[in-house]
Length: 78
Image (cartoon, rainbow, N blue to C red; front, side):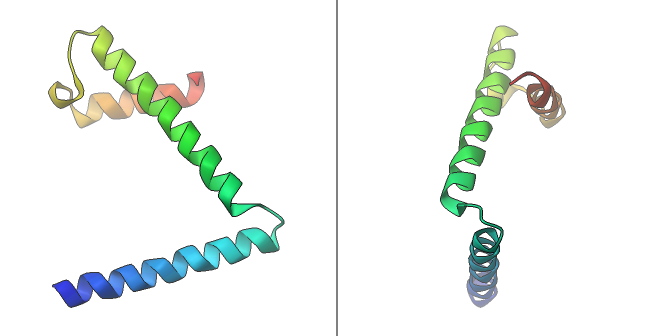
């Protein structure tokens, strides 16, 4: 199993490298794109946490279906 994981990591690394090169080809700064995506993820996740917290629960007490509902809602709100 360890060899398979290492091979998959190598392949995924190649995909990341290709995406970075492609983004540069398109004139997009890959570092900025990743930073913006991370910021967007944090905003959406905070929204999800706030909604669940407002219901008097925490993430471990919520279902994936509920989290997905709030995640999709966050895309429209934040």
